[in-house]
Every structure is written in structure tokens, then in C-alpha cells.
Length: 471
Image 1 (spheres, rainbow, N blue to C red):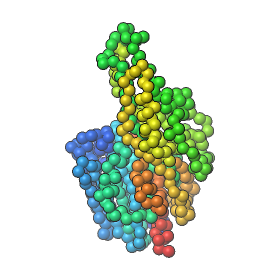
Image 2: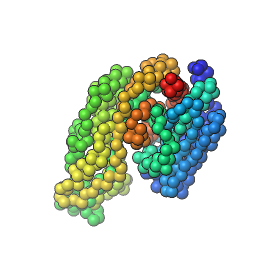
Image 3: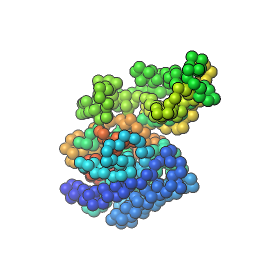
Image 4: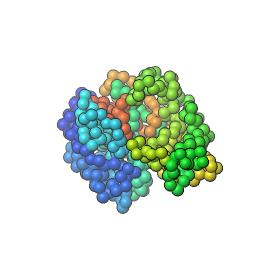
């Protein structure tokens, strides 16, 4: 295989085709069902899946089948099946649904208007995870162009990942034995610590999302008349949250939210910290004067990949400042997002959190906790020697630096599903969500140059995998 020719072919596809199609994709507000319950009638998800399917059908891959699979009431699934010359199969995964708009986009930028600045494509969804289908199929096509023999390659793109992949189990059941048993899974929905080498994800945290609601009155009352008599819902919320999180340190207090950190994962965190140093914290858009919770980059990596955390991500019942009168509010609700350690039992954690929040409510307040979803994390099986060597060679060949292995703080439910279903499968999980890429927040961008080279890295790993099958 000619690496220079491979890289050139992939770069041309990105320049002449992918960037334009990704820009068109950014313009589609195909928010995940959790954020757009009327997604089906709005038609944005259909527009996004058709955009991708049409591009896939135009690629020069003999015998390829492109199918948009549908189930009643479920988001669609895009499945591309590229026949191979070798036995076995590879599964490449991504998703096409998006997070909502969010606020705080810089002047000239926005969630649904693509803008290219300094080699970065700004807009919602290009990096998380719209590029995946284009990158995956381009990696395969570049190898086919050089007559590299491959096993069957399946590209699976779901449309519900940002909602916890609720529709995916039904699609997997519908597929039956169609997926076979892949010997390699490639996922392009993860983070990268910088844009200078390959980053391989070795674990994912789970996610427990729920709404905590506190009610003390049937209607708002003049604060001068009510405070001192009725407890405020804010104070009750503070007391309840202090049952599961230390308000000074951020440490979670329930045993069900903790796991033992494996020795190899601690070693990987330390090695990644050596590469990143201050950039572990520096990747965030800090307000002036604010500091990270620790000065130790290793601890910060462990905190964000193997320890549970709590974030309040939304509130209901608080009026805007401009219309906030002197009223003791009757009811407040907050949305909680708990990141669970990779090997934490999500169902057990959910039950423990609910019990801690609703038992013996202060002042007899009406308290409820509605656990919207509880998704387990995932800890990768040990890398096969061929795969670890292949990822390292690809990183050195395309970036000139060694690959780095690290846990990911986010959640990709499909990886856990696949891990249970195919315990002998090898996983290459990587992505383009690097410093300041800011997926889910404002000013999200895709680093075009990094993604282009990462596509070539995927090609090299696929070629090495094919060699192991041919032996």
C-alpha cells in the first residue's frame, strides 16, 4: 500500500466533497429526540439521514448497499454494507443526531450556520458526530482504490445517541444476525487530548440523568410575608444535593457511585498527563481567575474519566432576573446529570440516588426524583498486540508522534451494548473532540486537518486488521 497515495486520496475527498456535505449537515437542526419530541413531524432527522445516505451511494464502492432502516416511532438507522474479500467483518460506528443550540456563540458563529475559520468548521454536530460516516466510508474507499483486500465492512449510524441510544436496542433486535460477530469495532465519537497524535479511548463513563423537584407551597407568596415561616425550595434543594455530593470538594458521597480504579487505567492516566500537562485543565474556557479543582493533571484526568461527578444542567421555576419580584417561590426543579464510573452499576446507582434524595424530606416538603435514564459505562478489553502496534504505527506515520491511551468522560451507550454482545471483539475508539472543540456547548468545531489525518489512520488500522485475518 502506498501511504502517500492513500493520504492524498483521502485529503482530496475531504476537500472536494466531505467539507461541503458536512456544512450542509450543520444547517439541519436535527436535534436528538430528548430535545425535540416532535422530531418526526419536523422532518429534520429525515433530512440529515437522507443527506448522508445520498453521499454514501455516490461513493465508488462496488457492491455496497446503503439502507435507511425504520421502525415505528423510532429514529432511523443508516446502515452501509461494503462486501469484503476476506472472512469476518468490521463494524464502524457513529451517530447523526445533535445536541440543542445552547447560548454563548461568538459573533459570526451559530449552531446552524457553518463557518470555516483557520481550518475549523464551526457549527453544531460536525464533530459530534456527523463526520463519522464520511470518514469511515472514505477510509474504506481509499483502501479499495489500492486493491487492499478487506473483510466485510459495516458502517452503522444511529440517530438517538444524544438521547441515550434509546432506539438502538430495537434496531439491533431487528437486525438479528445481520451484523455477524465483528472482530474489530471502530468508533469515531470520542475525545482527543490534542490535535497532534492519535488518542485511543479505553473506557467511558456512564450517565444518570434525572429531575429533582421540590414543592413547598401551592402558589408564590410575598417574600416579606412568607420567609421565616415557610422554607425556601432553594434551601431544601441545597440540603438534598448535599446528601449525594460534598458541596466543598465535589466528592460523591454514596458508595454506589464509586468503583476501584484499575491499575492499568491509572498508569494510562499518568502517561496521558505527561503528554498534556497544563493542557488537561487549559482546554476549558475558564472565566478570569477561576482555577481547576486540582493542580495535578493526573488527578484531573482520573476525576473526569473514572470518578463519579454531579452537574446541575437545568432549572425550572426560577423567573428571569428582569421579572423576579419579591416572591417566595412555591416550587423548583433541577435537572441532574451524574457521570458514573465506567464499571459502576447504573441501575443500582439510580436506586441509591433516588432513595437518598427523597427520604425524610426537610420540613415535610414534597420531593420527587424522576430518573430519566441510567446508562452504564464501559471498560475496554485489553488491546490485542496487533491492534496496539497498529494504532501506534498509524499515529507515528500520520502525525509523527506516539498514540496515547486514555479514558473518556462522556458516554457512548452502543459500546457497552457491543461489549456485552461481542466479548471477544477488539475496539478502536477515537475521535476529534479536542481542546476547545466544545461539543454540546457554544462554538463547537471540527478540526478539518486533524479529522482528515485521522481518516487515514483508520485506513491503516483496517489494513493491519485485514492482514491478521489473511494470515
